[in-house]
Image (cartoon, rainbow, N blue to C red; front, side):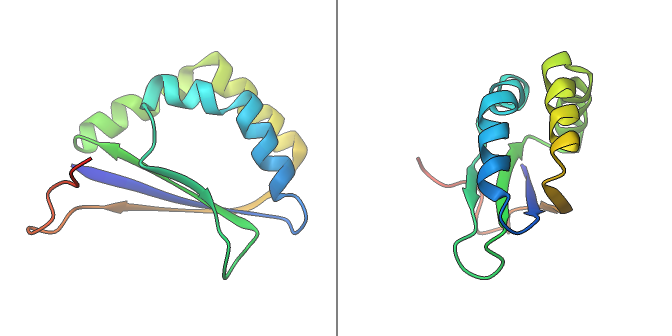
Length: 108
């Protein structure tokens, strides 16, 4: 199991606009291919112009396959175009996390 931890930072004053744009145009397209994320939230302390989402994959191959399918999806491509045109995002940081030996999965 691997986790893809993504942090996006918006220009000050634009995070609500970016969340609305994503909710309307990106959420369904992304979840259709990747499944529901482990977490999707806005940062409340520290860099409050940021939001984080965490996706779970079986392994690197599963992630590569799903990310390729997402990159080819017409609805996702349309969202990326709208997001770029809006100009709200200033940075993105991705981290791949692997569970420690003593943490294999969280019981839900």
